[in-house]
Amino acid sequence: MKTPYKNIYNILKLNRFIVLAVIIGAVLTCIVSVLIVVKLYKETVNNAFVVNTDGNVIPLKLVSLQENLEVETLAHLELFHNYFYNIDASNYEKNLEKSLWLGNSSVDALYRQKKADGVYNRLLQYSLVQKVINIESKIDIQHEPYEFVTTTIFEINRGSITDTYELTTTGNLIHVDRNFPNNTHGLLVTNFFEKKLKRIENEST
Image (cartoon, rainbow, N blue to C red; front, side, top):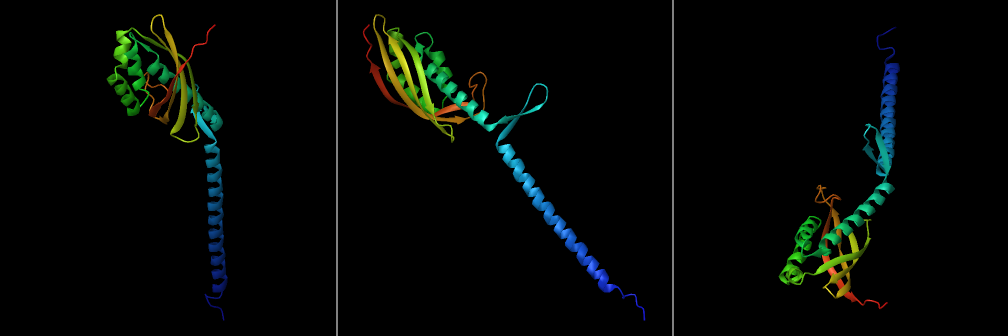
């Protein structure tokens, strides 16, 4: 005797097969999607992208970015130390104002301390010329804030007498928004400290 339910088991088997196929397909799709995302993430970590003047996207290696960071941090430190220590009666106010754009309150505190100690008054009173001769910095760019140690050689000209000094300063650098023309590197000196100052004896010729 034929009934409309004759193939019910076949229909159920077909439905189960379809459901399993859909589930397996969904799982495989998720796995492939995760693998693609992981691959893209790894590629992105090792590359940065810029748009050139033609509108083309250009990949830049992270290594290049690290090299650029080192160049910028060293340039920032050289600029800051030049502004802060390369001063005379005619330019000290302008140079110190520029240096304060490159550092935080620790720089301002040192400036105020020097001012209270009469450093800049003596500069004016005796027409002293403080000239930076050389700046060398060592900086760790592995982790921000970046620690640095800078050695600055400068001369103080007192007319007929010229004394040479070696100053060691320490501190950190952090990223801030670039400010043209006040802070072109987008870095800020923090925890600035004059660690050691010593007079260098001039060698007789």
